[in-house]
Amino acid sequence: MSAVTHGTDLDDRPSVAAIADALERARLTVTPIAQSSVSAPLGLATAYAVQHDLTGRRVASGDRIAGLKLGFTSRAKARQMGVDDVILGSVTDRMRIEDGGGFDPRTCIHPRIEPEIAYLLGADIDTDRVPDPAAIAAVAPALEIIDSRYRDFRFDLGDVIADNTSAAAYAIGPWVRPAEAGSFDNRAVRLEFDGRIVQTGSTSAILGDPGRALAAAARLARVHGFELRAGMILLAGAATVAVPVPRAGVVEATVAGLGRVSISIDGEGDE
Ligand code: OOG
Ligand code: MG
Image 1: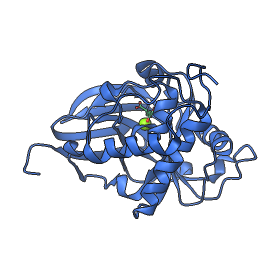
Image 2: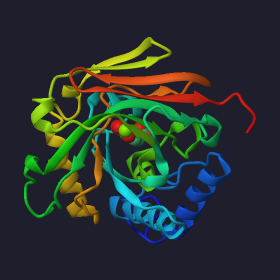
Image 3: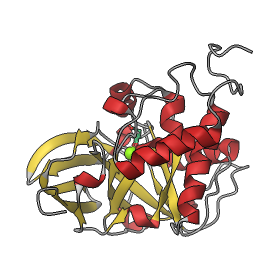
Image 4: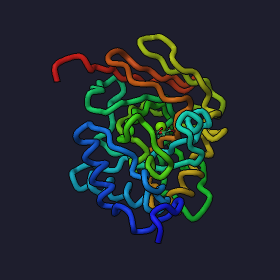
């Protein structure tokens, strides 16, 4: 077996547990690490095994799985990070920031923020079938904070999957029933810092049509061993590129016709 074979799941490289240990330590000590794939890219199966190991550790320490998140559903994001595949990660209740709540960026290595749409699942999803969009009970504007545990926010596909898709924190605005929201493709999305627009985009950037996010999540969930259950949220992916979190101020995302969500950043007070 060769350590330089591309994209394999061979065992002549650090074990799943060793990679998970390094990523967990990076998160807890707020210290970045080198990519795990320096010698050879992680295969998808290994990468998701590392991610599941990390999620399992968080659940063992008292976190509850609140839902799943898609990554790289928008071309803007995929281009920004130099990858071209949709990925799936988990978010927990302890990652949640209340709408209007505070976030201290010093808890992260190099946090970035991005505007998203969140879905609330009203029914369990049978991942063996094409999901019925009626399973979406509510939709809301969302903010996601991502924080790669890799140095300089640089990674390849396997690395970022192993790192639970850079998940760090998220906030969700008021839920709206799909019937009241109307069609939510092609809605203008705005990201503002203290009232200043820093990114604009459209929900149509999210896989062309955000309704397709559920189908993509179900497909990845089936292949890589995730569950999509009633009551879970699904972050559908950023509509714009991610922007470094400012040291202080209010960050707000607005989705036209849907609503807004904000968090207040405070990285300047005493710890
Ligand atoms: C990976 C996470 C991507 C999204 O919405 O596309 C993501 C990263 O960019 O670090 O959350
Ligand atoms: Mg995201």
